[in-house]
Image (cartoon, rainbow, N blue to C red; front, top):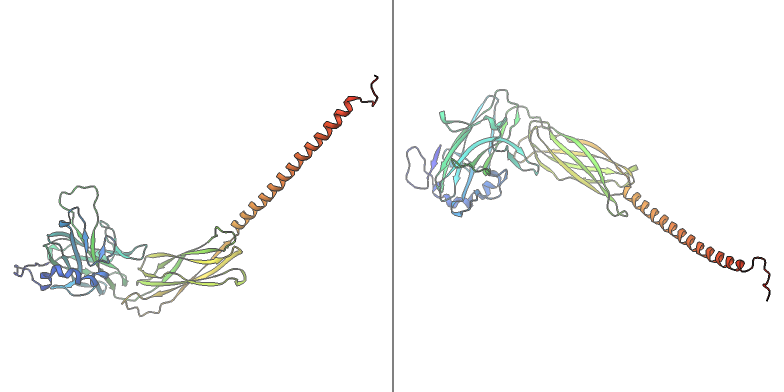
Amino acid sequence: MTVLPRSAARAPGATTSPTARRGSRRATAAGAVLLAACLLTGVLAAPASAFAATADPATRTTWAVEPATADGPDGRVSFRLTVDPGGLASDHVTVTNFSDHPATFDVYASDGVVTADGQFDLLPAGTTPVDGGAWITLGEGDAAGPTQRVEVPAESSVTVPFAVAVPADATPGDHPAGVVAALARPEGDGSAVMFDTRVGARVHLRVAGDLVPALALTDVRATYEPSWNPFAPGAVRVAYTVANEGNVRLGADTQVAGSGLFGWNARDVVAPAQREVLPGQETSGSVVLDGVWPLGKVSGHLTTTPLVVGDDVVEVALAPVTGTYVAWTLPWVQLGTLLVLVGAVLAVLRARRRREARTQARIDAAVASRTGTAGAADPTGATAPS
């Protein structure tokens, strides 16, 4: 590895660089580069560099990771390597410590994944890579290995060489990976909680051979979501999964069409695009068709169009895929409202009949009482003698 100290003096076996001597000023200039190249605790980092916060701001560590040559960063935002099966490629990565104190980092490679929110990430720390990340070794000679512990002086940089050895039986296509630098845990630190703070540069690793771009629509589901207002239409939510069954990463645009019986209330909706689906992985999406009245069956289809991502080159025709769905929009809310109204009317009529019955009973009782009193004075109608 090559250490780039801040001092202008050349150390034995080390290479000085004006870039290293301007370490603190590079923090701002590196912003545009690291926007697409850095990963911070599992997501693409928007800041120019990552930092590990501590209770004492004076000990806060800020660092960045960039593609490089043996002499230092070369302006690339990521690594792009195309290697034949059984072939070997080499490159360099620079770790820059922008802090005013030395720091120690663990530099290693891992497999790439895409998170649920569409961000590129690497496998969690401690997870053994099994694809492109497993083919990368860092360092040189006998010291080469899957991980390198690197000590970087204050406001200085260290450039680490790495090699990619592709197995002879590797599948052609994309094998996304990344190289990260994680702030090393201090020796003897036995704290129960440890934060994984890491910054990395993405490795677009492609094994030469036939490219097979292929997406599939799976697990298509449609459900009706009635409105709380019985006099307003509801919505149909169509959920689906886009699976990459090919060997090259692709984006996906999905359009959903739907209509009621006899083509009534037809509409088209464009779903949010999936900007990247990696080979062998999948991502979920959903779209809402508003203004749907509960008048029975609603059916339709989905069309997903594959897209080339970024600067990738895919010289194979990209074929769209389709899927279908059916949802039953039954008027449960309206029926419930109708039952409530019918029940209320019946309750009013019943109460009215009971009230009328009670009134009639009182009238009958009053008439019977008066008739009974008059008869009791002289049932025969005769007048008592004087």
